Length: 239
Image (cartoon, rainbow, N blue to C red; front, side, top):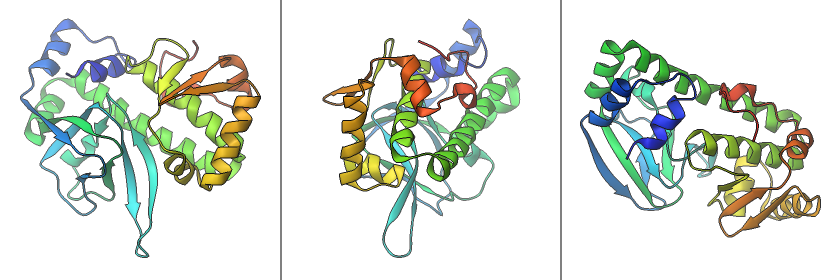
């Protein structure tokens, strides 16, 4: 099932039925990955490009002292690095944060699309550029925003990314992260993460029901977090 990918790419350009069918008909395999397992390891030369069908994964760097640092979260509709069709080795690892269902595209299949279907190639390139833009925004988050603003900004981003992939149609989105995982990605402790979430609840900006985050007032949340959706380069910038 590659519908989330098609939904996501459609926010860059209107895909024709033929182009959608090309993606649907691309030779691929479906696999399942257990929570905590690595999809790709730093230093490897992957033979496949992976698409997240369901579940969440993260990009991370493994440090020499045994720690690792999360640099991005991958949700359904996200591709795990189209650039591996060009680069020799991975410069980071990707790990399953939940049980995952993945689609595997051979690198030859992706290269065929890139070489023979220029509009789809542009859409894939757009997706990669958005990934880079998200990383730049995370750098701003870590260096220039308070802990409360970081988390609120991150939630705004996740809501729009979920909507772009057709995973949400209201002001809520799935977020299976633990407070430890959320805090580590935001550069704050678990205790501080708990305080931040409590403050966002007390301000009436969010509530949480199990693994789902609900944003109650989109305009207030955007203003509070200083969220400007321009970096997502999508037609979707409001609810």
